[in-house]
Image (cartoon, rainbow, N blue to C red; front, side, top):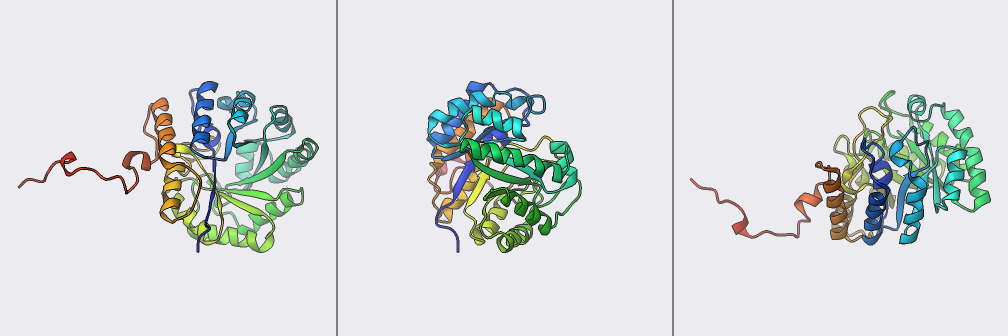
Length: 310
C-alpha cells in the first residue's frame, strides 16, 4: 500500500525561521544545517534569495549556502525572480525553487503580482537555470486552500502545474501554506495532477495548523507519493498568510514512517537532538511532540511515577 522509502526535505532554516522576529545569526543557522546533515537528511531547503527588505531573517542566504555546500546534502533555495536566481547561481546553490500561489489574493500578498505575472517571471529564471546547469523545481503555495478565498479548485492547481511544466519544470511541490488541507483535498488535488500531468514528480508540504498534517501525509502515502517537506520541531509559518503556523515536524514524520516500516535514511535520535537544540536556542516551546515523549519503545521505570493512593 505504501512506498518502501520516502524522501524528506528539511525546510527548518528557510520556512522554519523566516517568520522569526529576532535575527538568528548565520553561524547558528549553519550549525542547525550541519545537525540536519549529520542526522541523515540528504536534501535541505536552506534559505531563500528573496529581498532582504521583505524577509530580513534570510538576508544571509549566500553565506548560509556557501557553508551548507560543504556538508554533503543537496542544498536548495527559493528564488522569487531573476535577480534572486542570479544571486543563487553566484552562491552556487545546487537547486533553485520558484514559487507560485494558487490564488490571486495570496499571490498579491506574497509576491505583489498576479498569478499570470508570477508565471511570466518564472521564464527568465528557467533560462538562468538552463544556462547555469542548475536544477529548477517549483512550488505552488495555498494549493489546498487559501485563507483569503477558501477552497482552491483542483483544476486551477493543475492549470498552473501545466504552465510550469511547459517551462521545463518536472518537479512540483504542493504547499498547504496555512494548514487548510484534509485527506479529501489531498486525494482530489493530487488525483487531478496525476490525471493531467503524470510525468511530474510530486512533493507534498503540509502545515499542522489544524492538527491534520500527518493525517494528510497518510493520504499522500496511500496515493504512492514518496516525497515530503517538513521542519525540525514543527517550526515555521508563512509571514504573508493569515493564520499560518508551523510545518509538520520532521522528527514526528520520521517516527510515523518508521512505525509504518518505511525507510527514510534519517537517524531519529539525532533528529530529536537537533529539534531540542532549536527549541533551546529560540527559548520557547515548539510544536514537535516526539522530542518530549520519545518513541513508544522508550520505556520508563515504575518508580519514576507517583502511585495512585486511596
